[in-house]
Image (cartoon, rainbow over all chains, first blue to last red; front, top):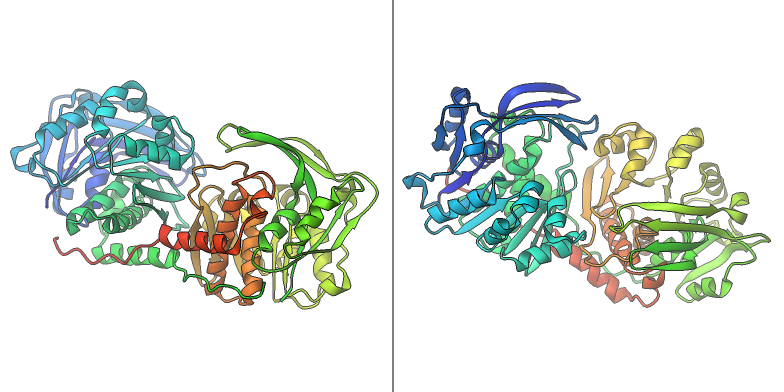
Length: 308
Length: 308
């Protein structure tokens, strides 16, 4: 039940109130893989420049990440530089240098084309479509997108939506895509475009799964220390898809569990810079945090008060 | 197990993208009472001017609201005029005329002084303290406050916190009060000042209950139509306290249930202007919505994937 991710592989330089990092591992495919591989092996397709620290990338391979789809080409790697506000609520992009990522044209290696679970990270929807043309018969396809593509590649994005099972976006993206500020109406609109499920990520609050048969809400894990929010959404996707692939079960009940895994992995991601938190993380620790979610929302149906 | 609320009784003129209302019933005590009375009889203490539409207030009495503590004095009633943005995310106060509310000095009628459950709506903390001096032996006291008092009446507010069991605030207020932008650290700080529990309301996202023995999160009910957010926080408090009084149970497990009642009543409040939604609402409808929350967060603990 192989799990494939196609997305960016970047070098992030991030400033938070708690410190800064320079040229750390980043990008949607990296956060997804580092998170998802704790639950299921991950196959990665992406591109890096000649200057990418391959040793650090290969360090991830030990944890169940197959890098056979990562091509290294001449040119600079994708670099992103950003700075967070004191309360981590806002971030400013200081610099984006696409480098070799500007010419990225995903080629799925033969041995990855039977992938049953496919995550299309936030890249040009035309490229996301080209990935779907190369995989044979996935059981479930999920994708991410962003304001840039919603505005600039609307037609390709709509064509993509007709071919994916799950769209994962944040609330601002759901609003922009649908033109509706109400998140639940926005999700219903998206469901009509093709996906069977929409996941609306709400950052520090949580995430909501909307399908035709119901709505599921998972809160964000209550963290007293958040170090760096970068990559939380992709780590969420890694947990979500990693659980689906590991269980090979796409029933609504299992998508709910996948949401909890997603929220758990997103919460780990923000506890350290880059993908560092996943380095020593064990499956027992993941399981423990997933269990904590059950306690976080636990209540028994109130008895009917009889005093009125 | 009587339930007492002390707070404002106002006339609200509200503009939303969906319509407007003029001199509608409003104020913290009114929203609290209209909501709470669906679960348990509510005793109200407040003040209105000679111009208040007493017939409309007395209409509430039929639903289990005791207005013996509402005094009508000469002068204008408290009026608030506000306007919401197109997405209901922001509101602008167009006019505040305190009228007789400026001289409000709560006097608790003799027959209310044995109240077991007391809610101190958002008024001057010195007045909130004066209420506590007048009640005999409440089982549980909860209070609300706002930025104005946090800044201007800090010492009185701190004295109040030493005497209440539950503080209900929104996230901005929790941050301002504690000086900590992390909501969970802010809540821990507040717990050290006296309350056994802190409820942090997060608007359209949900609300979190923080106690020394754990954290409980209840999402907001997923509404596709929100009409007027005014009073949602006080309606939440009404549901929260109404359930506690009706069940006469202040255990942590029952506070969790009270959170769900609070979120349910808050969701009803925003579906119409003023307290209109509570007018025809039945306890069966409340119970149905409370049950819907159980489904909204329901998941079973995931089996351990065995594929890695």
